[in-house]
Image (cartoon, rainbow, N blue to C red; front, side):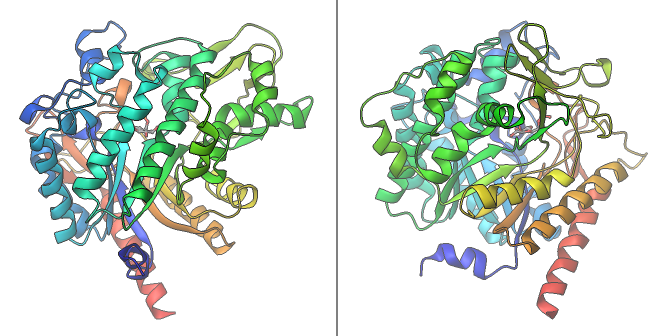
Length: 478
Ligand code: BG6
């Protein structure tokens, strides 16, 4: 029995929270870190609409001990974070930066000292600039560069890290970079790149998973998908057809390779519908076969509620201005389908649905359609504007209410037989919310960005702490 089994057998459930390197670390050029695509974009592009950057972010780079202490005091037993590729391999390939390795070693060791199981994501949107300049994820060579970087990480940290994921949300990342155009390199409504990206990301993931197994790392590895379970507006015509098309658009290029080790059977048909092609090479099929994950990480915020397309050209709606904008989140794909707006479902200030029931529906759907995989909820949370009281304390009742509902539905799904083994609240502390900047807050712990990054746990932090304690008590008493 490998030590990976202990990760689960020694705990009732994995309860924790998560962050991503660019969003929380700061230290953007510290200790010989290479420049990242996001550094470059935020420093130079007019499309950085809120004029903010992750140069200092939440200063986790310097304060990780304080944050890990808070996790442990909050009864959390696991922490999901990502490694900055450019901190470890500054140019994306080639020379390894010992400063970066040392930093992650210290941080991982501190997690273990506090009995916090580290869960490492290798890529969470922050591409080294040198690779971005060579075409980024459209250049197939990047799949080898990623594999090389992954091997460096397995070698350096694989003796202690047991939980791994290759890539965070390949689908949503591709959507923002190629369809919305709000993430660098800012392509708009580029369906061809949207699908080619997903293909290359999944291929890179498959190569890294193959290396992980060859290197005999005692752990498990998977990929993290942004949940987009499709639900149809009752007015939808050709329901079966629209479901299939939307499901392909939102899920299948990720879930099928991740869980079945192949490309979706409907790929050829969908190439015709969406009018794209895939550049591929002989041997890719075998790579996908070997690159199936051990589990699925699911970031669960919302569903995709759609209907058949009625009229108008392709359009993408997004809202990176929060309360300053009335825009909702959605898409209209000419001749295919469009997002529908369900009046009965609440939306957050950034125009996205808030619908905790989805947690149950999505988990059951994945269990039934994809042979009952092991699942971890790798993100779930609620972004809001927040005002602290005079002691810097945030009474985030709205977050707690929604949080409680999401957890209720997750445990119901578990009860119904879904093999869900972990939950990570997004996010550990307030951090940089990509193009939404710092005012969209997700943290269990407040960060005062104006006042030396002071940390103050919010009401939700204490609520989660009690929730975990009660959960453990109940399990231990039964
Ligand atoms: C997920 C990402 O898509 O959603 C996180 O993995 C992100 O990195 C989170 O921060 C919330 O999205 P946003 O845009 O509100 O920060």
